[in-house]
Length: 436
Image (tube, rainbow, N blue to C red):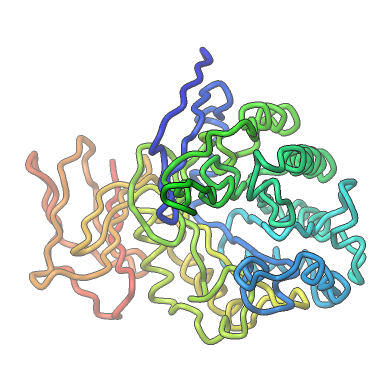
């Protein structure tokens, strides 16, 4: 594939920020190598670190303006006494997830793995564990696709906030990123997903605090890229990644376009390339808070969200934040199991499908070469669903689960399903159209 480099604005929008993204097609995975990820449809995200001890979310250090030394003392209380990589993977499998992504290091700088870059890590805490190794080993044993989250930015470094003023410090932060990414992709066997966060240029300086004699203090704004002399050099970074793990799926938050687009919390809908929505199972922070158990979203909402995303050809990455001891909240575990029960019954309409029609008034469709699955989230008053015409001939239409027949008419003008009823009051009433 011919290599080309372009700097393109407005490639993706996340949390109201606009980033400039380097487009380099030579680093993209082939469609064949991306297929497992597109087929997976559902993954489990896990945010875990020192912030769980505070119970105020993963941004506690920054939001509370905690002194880095004082925050660092939390390491002395990090026991992870109930952490089990196997338990985490078991929870994901029970939920019907096909891949996982676990934080190896968040913006606070504390690493959950054995790293040669400093002593601020779980091996040098009372836990004395390489949590990433235990998790990845368990994933490999269970046949689960293993993903790693990594944040290039680090709030301990003045060079992140003022990359030109503290340029040498920013370069040390960059060296940390390159060293630790190399370790994560060299020391744990096959890694399936690399999920960066905060490595785009508009994050540098947190919108850039600046001074002007005329207007005083102001910020560059998150809608504008940093243009100073520091650079993460994302093509260089991800070229290294490709050398270490040629088939790894990479998200776009390092400054390179990545293999897929990321939407966060707010669902924007279908995109023209592979995409994923990441959001929380609890309506709280990504890291653990005491409210997490009481704010778990309903099973109905979970199913509706999953179906909405997949019908628009995306993946759902659903997050939980384990407690300080490493245990996932039982209320979250239970909800994930319930999602898994749904997928055990109706997974054929989710896994390995492509997104088809989406109509917010009633639902949408997914499809394979042999079938179309009509996901009805709200039955129209007249009990009729109209779909576009297709070249394949429909041999039968049946409710998935009961196998009861559904009346349908196929013509050059489209497909009409008649007499739709939701007698069992299912969240997702699915009609399977079998193709000849």
